[in-house]
Length: 178
Image (cartoon, rainbow, N blue to C red; front, side, top):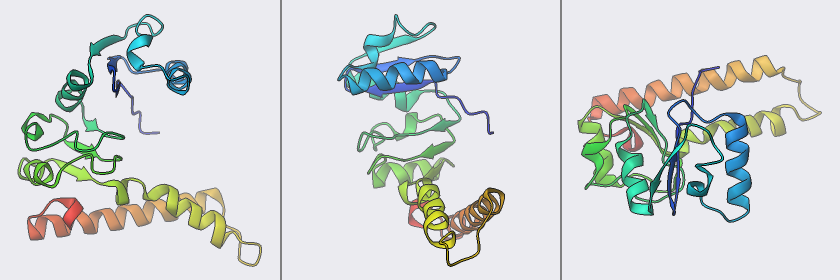
């Protein structure tokens, strides 16, 4: 729907990068390899057009500095910190990791005009949909169509997201503190 592509995946062995974006088949290979205890760097020859950055630290540095619209730290704590926050090129950071961005780095990103969405907001979609599925679609209540649920979720996200950004701007604080 939004034409988003994943182009960078890293783990403790390093990073696997595919500028044209990983295909569904690529992602299935990566998931299978990870389930088998393998590193993403072992997949370079199996995924056409990919390249590898070796080593955890080098992979993490390459991730933080990658020139993308959206950066999504999703597993490694403190991957964006005061020592590398000035190197972040992305304008939107969607932090799915528990503590993927340190508090000091968050303030630095805010001063540079970067927008950071932290876990509670970034992960709220699943919680919201679960609410609809479990409570509002209970047999004793009126059924909601998928379109109605989607409209409600999008409306809530837009209004709450705008409220967060307005408060962030008014108080001159990062969005995760608003």
